Image 1: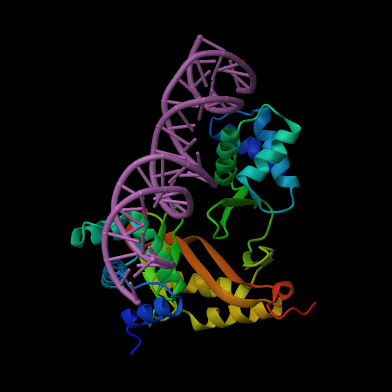
Image 2 (image 1 turned 90 degrees about the vertical axis):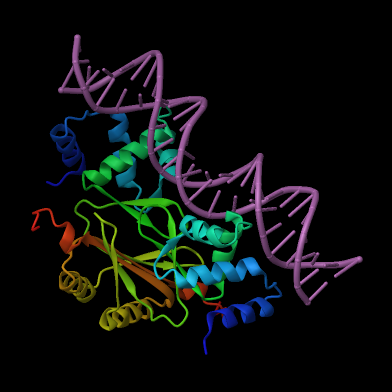
Length: 146
Length: 146
DNA sequence: CTTGTTGCAAAGGATTTGCACGGCT
DNA sequence: AGCCGTGCAAATCCTTTGCAACAAG
């Protein structure tokens, strides 16, 4: 269970929306990409399969996927939005190399818990959070070790 | 010491740049704002003092301030960049209300330390990080307590 | 049939850039 | 004089939106 297409279909039905081939193609490509995709990258890959898809549809569908809880929007600091699948994927944060843009996903339960405590201490009901660590990865260290 | 104008002047000198009235006016307004400013807000406030300043200069100066370590760029998720002074201001993160956009600054040393450990565990040299907690503040809770 | 959906192109909003003029140094 | 900085407007970049044709329920 927890099949993304199924979840999507259900979300669509519940919202009175419609099930179109474009949407499922986009979801398909999005899920199988295996990495964070920008809208443009996703658009390009989708176009490789189905040429009759406009970028507007990719933007609209990506937004839909976020609402359906199937995708998460990420901002790595370069001004363009990236997306990653989120269904059945454990929450995690990102460690990003500012040189090669490689990124590592991590999860630190202690940090997560501290965040929740902190929010409730301020009377907030936490809905989401984003933690981005920017640095230089081992391969990109200035003192060339290679 | 650690007078921002002084730091700025020094940075400018070291970089072979020039000391202009616009730059100092912008810095002045920026420092005295006492809150996070978008480029447009800063531009508007600067214009109230000196009408002969273009927004391009505000953008350019803000970038300069970031390079000089006097400002930090923030992204609250609405697609527009905001800035806050950073010189002599302790590092902190942000807790943002998704309803009224009010934001609280906080610092949790344990979280900070865990981030560093995490980064070095992955071979990264951490240069900066951003932690954004999004939620609903006490005043904006759905079940109207008022 | 009714209403949501699509692709295209135009519109938008934020930020950047080209350029000729003006001002430090 | 030389060079950086400035304002203005045009240009970009990413994303959204209007619209007429189209397709799903």
